[in-house]
Length: 97
Picture 1 (cartoon, rainbow, N blue to C red):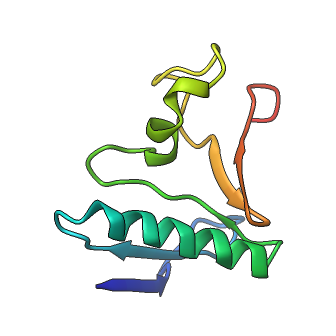
Picture 2 (tube, helix red, strand yellow; picture 1 turned 30 degrees about the vertical axis):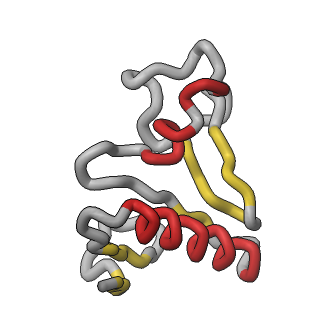
């Protein structure tokens, strides 16, 4: 099942945001369907920024793209660097993070 809800509380100055969860069990294709839906959502609403993480593995898009990532990116520097926006997968470089 898929759940999406408005974040109940946020610190002053933090943008309003939604949080969601997909429980896909052993079917990894459902996880990728969720990523595709989020990508399509950002294409329809270009100002929307989305992150997607796996509860066990972390940044699943980084894991999938490990063979083409830049040398400066490591598990220690990878946090909060992947964003879905405008129908694209974006990677924030150290200069922009």
